[in-house]
Length: 242
Length: 242
Figure 1 (cartoon, rainbow over the protein chains, first blue to last red):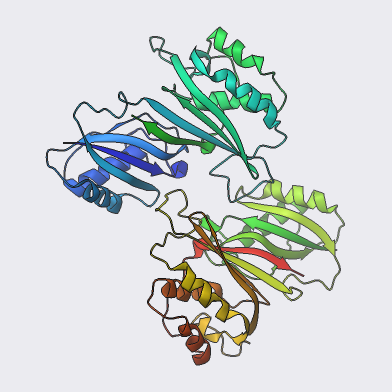
Figure 2: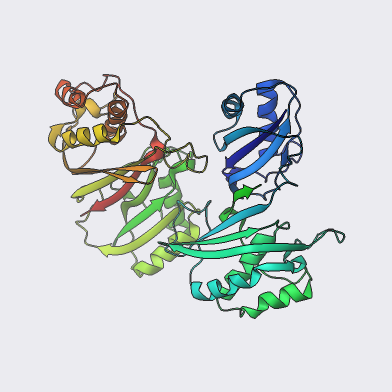
């Protein structure tokens, strides 16, 4: 039986999603909870990794288990063994051809910035950046839409054989009080891609670059061109659609 | 010169406001920042203490310093030495007869509860409590208004000589999406008073007690009557008025 799970987490105290030995990671906590609940050494497959301090409102993973357990009982069992800052929102039994990563049709990331006064209660959830011209950022963000080779926005350590052509379906900017919300919906995203796109957008919003810089980075396809990587704490894996 | 400061903090990682030796407390961090900034061993006087994990949006304290420094420079200097989760919002030079505690005319506390689905991103900022009848809580909260002996809502270890008669000017309940906000404005509050009032309100909202239980606790004036103390993480010292 294959179980598809949607999970939310506060990434503040984790070294990201992917397991790294005994370091505190989301994956390690989930595997440990599955072991405690069902006495099996399950391997879990997520829609993708999230970096250190990055949060999730709707990360998806799947795992296989020989026995059939009611989805809601799996949810309750896992949540009872997970720490407070990781929570399974839903569990569903899916066909064997479902794969949390390869079956994903769309991923949605959101990035939040506090543009009001510095707020010590928000530091783990959105960076505080002032003097941003949001109108310039809104004009620029749409240049990311469409199918492009995003190699220029990838991690500098990217595997050269990796396919870096991805499609961004939609981008959007919303201002909610002192918070600015940036939405990216796409087919898939490279490691660091959203944080590097946001980093350049922030530099555009502060007037360091014109929006055409985005086209230049897309064209040069050189991930070593230095530009700001936006802090992980503002990023949320919001939703994965299948 | 007497300096009045308004400070906001995330209480999550602190053992409350009041200094307790080397334990991580808000007061210790502020005193340390003053020492680093101005090389003086200042004593600070706050409007009141806040418990472990309790937050502040507008705590007030004052301290004295022989030299005159521009208020905005004091703000910048202290913030540069304070940790990220404590932030001085404003500094002003006041008369010598100003006292952060004794001059306070009104204190406003707010308490937040998540009544929607469990959210791992909110656990340090509001408890998750479901099955609450907010209408019952709203009817009950107004019974706290007026001048009463709040001894029944004080800490069980309260000093018997302490004056426990306080006035609550106003109470209010607001529902904002999945969040319920409870507002208490009063002359002053006893240790644990807001959390014990909220604890009883939660029991009323869950149907364990009728609202008349509030009148009974006020009348009996016995702080040892057991009722729920609401978690510290949902409480915010919101504003102090002089």
